[in-house]
Length: 232
Image (tube, rainbow, N blue to C red; front, side, top):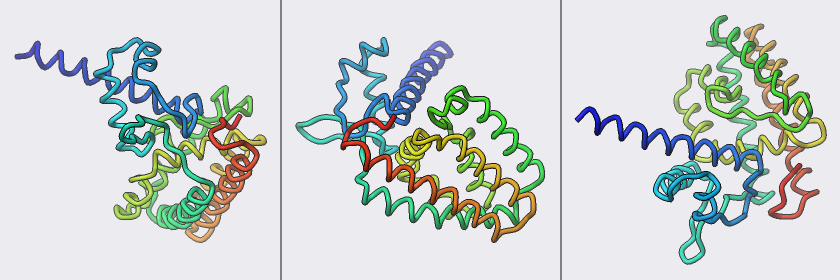
């Protein structure tokens, strides 16, 4: 019985690894929004069988990162400029509210942890070179930490549910445009400064400004690149 459990854990771990690798490729633009993907080609490229790959793709469907169309296949999810603009307007309001509530509830140790997190972000070679600002997991995601610090479960679910993963794709694309990565890191530090002051209005304003700037950058990037093209 123990041997069976060990085998299941290893198989599940492989699916986790494949899922993380594909999600990273989608967020970074290695797999371009709107492009079709071949299970056979991906399985060969990753050196895995099609079973774990299919389970990973199903997970990514649940995260709204890929879409399956009958008789056509699987493609990388893509938002129109209009849809993205509307979602980022909503996100600005929701995350602004979360940041305001976090300013009232966050502990000194949580703020210290956020500062340490940004120190780790600042060490990324990609960020230092201006190529982008990648936060590869929820625990490494500054915005997810702020939402969680709000203590408002409904607000947390609204921010981190449904289209959270797909919006991360466009957040990353925003960071690749016109030196945005370093500016975004500075804006994150401004948010922490507002949290240190326990000033809800200042914290909300700082978060809203940050997301507004990201929206303007990614919309400009989408306008300057044809549909389906990677933003570099």
